[in-house]
Image 1: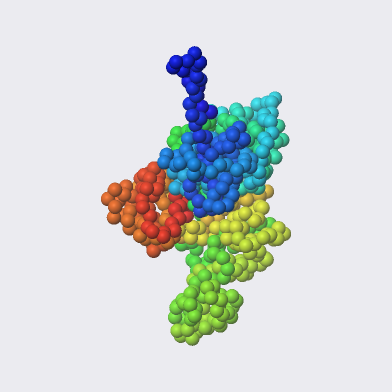
Image 2: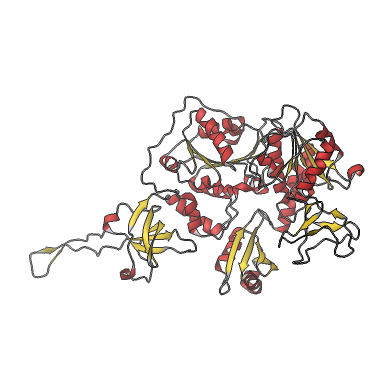
Amino acid sequence: MGETVSPQRVQGSSQTLIQTAVPSVRVARVVPDVTGVDKTFDYLVPDALHDQVRVGVRVRVPLHGRNVAGWVVEIGEPSEGLAVSKIRSVIKVLGLGVTQEIVNLANWGTKRWVGRLRSFISTAAPATLISKVPTARYMPRSIKHVSNAVEGLKEFGSGLITVAPLTNLAPMISAIACDGPTIVVMPTQHRAKLLSAALKANNFSVASWPQDWAMALGGVDVVIGTRSAVWAPVARFSNIVVVDEHDDLLQEERSPTWHARDVAIERAARSDANCILLSPIPSLSARKWAGDRVVFDAQNPWPVIKVVDRNKDEQWSRSLISSELITELRDKSRRVICVYNSKGRARLIACGSCRTVLRCEKCDAALGQRDKETLECPRCSEVRPVICQICGSSSCAVLKPGVARLREELEAAANRTVFEVTASTESVNERSNVFVGTEAVLHRVQSADTVVFLDVDSELLAPRYRANELVTTLIVHAARLVGRSESEGRIYLQTHTPDNALLLGLSKNDLTDYFASDSLRREMLKFPPFGCVAQVAGQGTKSFLESLSETLEYSAVVQTVIKDTELGLVRAGSWQELTEVLSNAKRPAKSRLTIHIDPPRI
């Protein structure tokens, strides 16, 4: 380990002395795989493990009186000020972990999303101990796959391809993979499996992430999986493809709230590879990143989308069932799905006489309706008859009907059995032809002729800066369901705001004006991608945010909004500014803060 210096003659002697420098101490910096530990620790590398310990491997080390697993993230000299005599040694090498590239990317991720290094590395590491990697399997290309959209993007390398909801992605991904090893990120495991089978049929070697972790590291034509596949350690890659980049499933909901699209863009840039985003209705973040590097794929048109103006439907103005919906329901040849994001019976029930909201006498929560004669408290489970505590009336009015009540109304209008679907529904009756449910119904039912959003305003007008994009995600799901219909597939959007830019664009099949207005609104408010927002929650939130606003150094950079003692927002002009402030600001004693950077639903 040391370096040899020039031989010197010993004074007064004919002998020469070979002087060697004192061997340097080799230390491995390890991130323990322990919840709540957010530090790296130095460990000596024993001579017996010298050839095995390298960046990324999983090791066993002593920590606070017990032996724990962890990953080596750096090898070098001991940390400054740390006595070598106090450094303990690595006990054992357990197996493979990640690569130097992934460690570097994870370090960037900790800054970008104010997260812990362990969170990112554990996402990329194998779930089981792996010590051997198979040899690379790059298949010879006897057939060159071609896609007009991919060819159109070649002059840019990276960019955005706008596709129709039912575009067959196999030819497109095959054309991309012909140019070199490719990582493909999908929103769902089901779609990843279908695309994987199609690529294998096209004679590509495919590793399904994370099951085929070792194959991916060894080298294959295509690595495919859900959002965590963007962290896959691979031998080499030329392209990263993110399918349906607009989908919320590509973002981690827990802290750190990393997004696969953003990781893919950064990873491709660091590796001099191409990043290609695909989406039927691209997010503003994707459009801003792509700029002029946008290609439109001409395959498969959208289904018919009709906006139903409920302001004009006087006959059914007090109901969510419109005249257009009744026409669809009474056509027994059509399979109809009704989407309404309100689970159970009425959320808010008022007295039919005095309009007082019926509340629980025990805990003051708004009561729900178990059946026609019984009210039940969702908080304390108190049960009582349908009687107003103010005027004694036994009549009640539904202010916001739930899914169960809608099912009854739909059955009466359609004269057909209606199957109710919510997030807790495990299986559906595929023989049914009319369904009603929360957005879960779009994932549980395999096909339909008509999808009706009974109250699209409840999503469109939600107090979230990404409300429009969340609606487009639902509409894309609906388009895929009705697009397979043998009769004309239709989507109805029932609204009281027909002049909404998104609804107008969807009805005209031209979203240009919507994209422009959405971009202008976000830029004016400094919402992503024109700024960065963090949601801070937990014990000590109010004190922490108050200290930011009172500190001149920070108040000039960020804006704070305190919602209550344990919830608030911080906003800045860029993620670099915001994360630097959040990382450096002193936190209150005994605080337990959770930080979500650019969360999807604020």
